[in-house]
Length: 284
Image 1 (cartoon, helix red, strand yellow):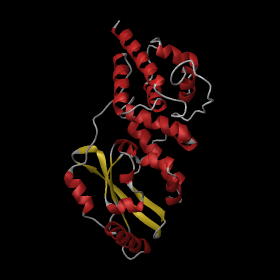
Image 2 (cartoon, rainbow, N blue to C red):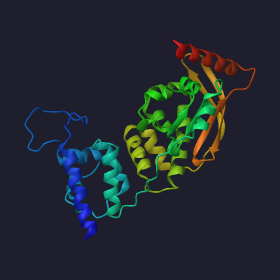
Image 3 (cartoon, rainbow, N blue to C red):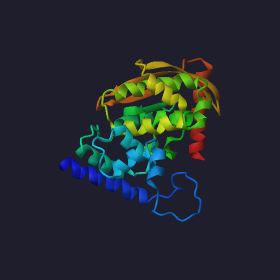
Image 4 (cartoon, one colour):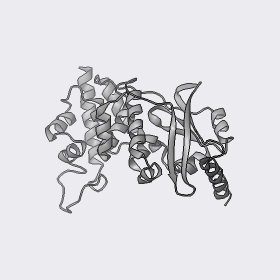
C-alpha cells in the first residue's frame, strides 16, 4: 500500500512539472494553435524521453510498479528538473523500490587546491567520480578550457569531450581519448549500479553523440592511470605531455591529474610560454 501511495505521488509530480513547461522550452516547434492542456502534452514528453505514450501515461497514473533509474534520469533531463526537483524525484523512486545509488557531493581539501595553485608550470586538475572537474590551476584552464565559466553541474570532463566542439580540435586523436574516457566511466559505474548522477550523465550523452552510444554499449574494461597525450593548442601550438594521476588520501574517488613535458623539448618550452601568456591575461 505504501508503495502505491508513492507511485501516485510520483505521477502527480511528473504531471505538475509537465504543465509548467512550454514546447519552446524543450525545443519543440509551437504551432500557435490553442492547447487543450497547459504546458506539454503526455505524448510530447514521451517522445522526448524515447518512451511510448501508453507507458508514460501509465507512469503518470501511478501504474508503473518499478520505473527504472535510467528512465527517471532521462525524465530529469526532459523535464528540465533543477537539483531539488531531481532529488525529490529520486527520493520518491526509492520509496517505490527503485534501486538508486546516491552519494554526497565531493569537495577538494584546501591544501590540495593550494598545492596545484603553487605549480605554475604544471597543468593540474582534480577529478571526482565520473570525471567531474572539482579543482584546477590556471595553467590547466589555459590548456584545456576556462572551467570557471562552466556551471558547476556541467563541469565534467567526459561531458566536455562530447559536447564542446573545441575539444575535438584540441585533441587531434579525439576518438582515442574519448573512447578511453567512456571506458573509465563505465568501469566507475560498475561500482555503484543505479547511481542517479551517472544515469543522468549517460542519458544526456547518449542522446547527443552516436560515438558515445556505441562505446558505452561495448563495455570494454581497460583503464589507464598514466599515458601521453598531444594537444593542439590555439596559442602555443602542439604540446605533447605525459600525464599521471594520484589518489587523494581524503577521498579515494578523487584523482589529482598532472601533465608534464620532458625538459629540453619544444613541448616543455611551450608550457612555459603558455604559463607566461596566462599570467599576462590574468594581469590585464
